[in-house]
Amino acid sequence: MPTPQPRLILLHKQKTSGRVRFLCLSSGVVAFTPLPVLSALRDDDYSPKVQIHPVAAVREAELKLGLPEGAIEPDAEFSAWVDTPEGDVPILLGVFTELDPPFAAAERTKSRFIALTECRQLSEVERNLLRRAYEHVLG
Image 1: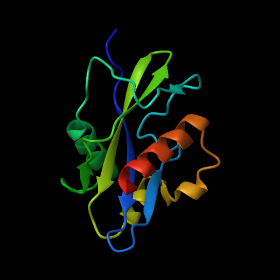
Image 2: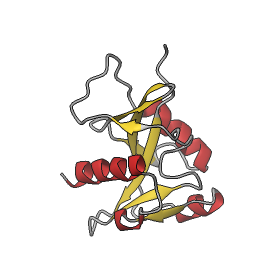
Image 3: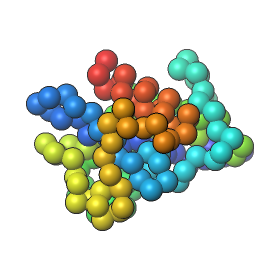
């Protein structure tokens, strides 16, 4: 069974204050295809046979958001895996590079930036993914 397409969590970390905000699309924080209902986050120590590098997924996100190349930087040190009915889905991390979040791109895509404290409406899997990403960027 082939590995399903990787998904991205896109975040902005303010360089001066350390404030972290996540891009929340209309479907949630996992860009750009929502995770199936029966998804479960794998343990931190889960080690798949295949490792996915985020460069291609990050470039695709830049194009979908109408951003120039280099507007999102891949964080190759972060990865998480979600067990889904279609197979394990790699979750990668992209970090916006500008000083401020790209609010215009978010508006164009009917998205918004949220803090970790604003994720109550998300699924348990997405909340746990955001927690892992948050701990990673602050760690």
